[in-house]
Image 1 (cartoon, chains in turn orange, brown):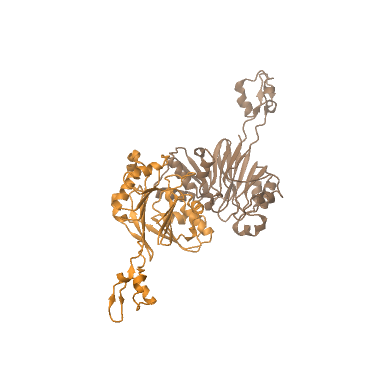
Image 2 (cartoon, one colour):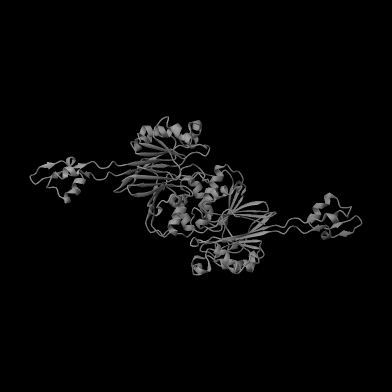
Length: 304
Length: 304
């Protein structure tokens, strides 16, 4: 259980020497995930020593270059490394054509199953669900079709309250499985011991909401309500709020407002416009609205 | 007049922290040219302070990722920088579809004319000619359709031999243009002064042959004969010559053999396989055959 988020790139627009476009590596409930993949992401994965061969799921928010131009290169590299494990790509309709056209023309078919899950719904949709996690789209408001993603752990098993279990000599080890799954214990004389007397609640399931790129969109609050961690883009400060309408981006204050309304534990800001030299201003502005704000930075790791 | 070649990336296969895929910036006869454009090239252009807004011609040798995955990002960046000057892309058939599909899906049409010159001939072909230079394809032998490129300065004007010109009082400044263009001077009495008596030969026109990726292909020698500078790939050393047949790459010794047969002034090696930790071995091996060998390295500048 647990969330570990590594920021690879967190700047907007063009890659520069010390400003990398969006990419994040998320380890959630032992699953290895990549979110967005700007140009140069594969180099950042190596630099930050991410075990990137383990990544089986890549989520692409939208088809602006700073969020996906590194994808085809990463896929090619997986091929050169003779990967055999399947790779799932979730992204807007069209992403399959972009990648397969390039693989076809370079005669570089992959050595592993490459599965595309193209998205076109504008409603929140569960796009991945297994025993460990669910991933739900967060429809955003940007210049092209864009989704954020809500990654949620599934609740684990209940934990045995060994002090109480030990008091009941009839309970054997083979009963533990049923207890952890929430079942009551029935004694030989028919007496029922309620599960709550023998177990403790499971560790709280954590969740991570990734929201980039988007204009201020309060309707996402209901989707991401009570998330542990929220990454929300803040391309601008309030001083250039005039630009948010045309560009469909947010200010730091707007990001903080979403965090507050959604009652998340922590807010991470990123996707800073290159016009701002001092990014600490983003934190200062957001903190006027919400009090647990962190700044995304290449190489920074958040653990919950 | 003159050649200035800046190596941006010169390693094979995947980009790594200190190993960038192929890209070169060439300034020849005042023209600004990019040759190949692996992932991350735009960052290297900035790092090495190349005036990349001046680049009007980009030549792509082939559609393997390590030679063109950075192209769409560079084009997008030109768009973000509000470029207005036209940009010419020369590369294998299919390159236009790859780029335009991505621009279309990201709704990022360029603010400047983007002109594609798709190549499919397997014969040496002049693909760019103007007053200053010619560019001719060098058909190579690789796993996909691949061209090298021969960049040749056009000869400049003859230079006035002022000592002799001053001896002829009838020659006026308005005659200089004809003299520089090789015309004889006719005196009022009909006497002809041969041009060679009044002028000196123009500065020798320089040329640069770029040959990557390719197996050893001696038939290119006639195309690149007597070039000033030759970049020839050397993915392997002779110790792994067994790999050259299947991968269609060359050894350092084979590259040197081409340089010797073509009688070039200087050979630059590059496209090193990551299996070799010490690249000085490439120079040592090539020098057993040809005596003016340099190693490509990111940031290295060659001036002629």
